[in-house]
Length: 307
Image (cartoon, rainbow, N blue to C red; front, side):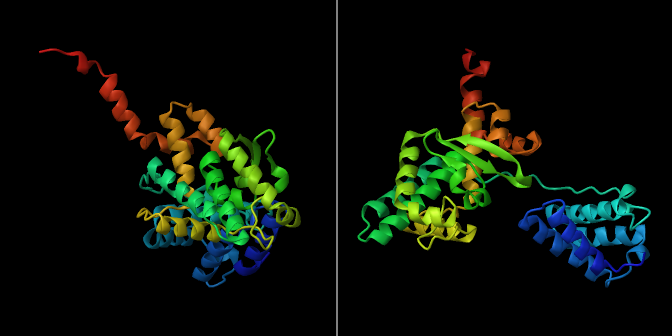
């Protein structure tokens, strides 16, 4: 069967959406990566692309992109060629023989100092208590609820924005989170002040929440975008004169690092973060330097030597 890359890619993306139930972000990444692949080979016939052509393309990715990005683009290709093999569109899958290795630098997750989080939260609470209008009081209440939830649960920004009202039970203080690959987990809200705050937010925004179906919604009853959350954090950082550039994901890194430094078993942290593999969670073991210093200062036997 003679098919051009363009038609095959469109068929695969439909298959990914309807059969594999891939989320929109994954489909968007696949579309970008596979269109790039199509353009490189000028929409050739799929059966005219040899293994050496594929190796040349992978070399092109390695030369032009960071290892993590190149690795993702190759993963998109592997998924496409697995589909082609499954559908018997190709007889031989080149990825059965091609060996790919990416030397990714170890990038330690960026965390937020706890005093900085306290300063940031204090500023949002201050803006809420000094609000002179109903709109500003509600708006700042939403901002507090977002920041407190990010820090209390370590959830991803996409998970927070997609949180449905039905996913939250404030009486049991539990949140049902649908993470990457629709993996489901339940996380407890452990702080009584945060539970009270979220109940206060829910009461204030109940009509907007019921209209949109989402727990975090703006005053127009629309679900939040991740960009709106980023802008909110940047705004309060400026108001509080915080120099550090804080992203929503840094709350997640800080959540994990603090638990690790408090001697929480890494397997519990893995479950709370929704990581499918513990190797992903293990990156946090590299950042607990303050804990390491404390151990080596107080526990190492050298401190007992007398000369």
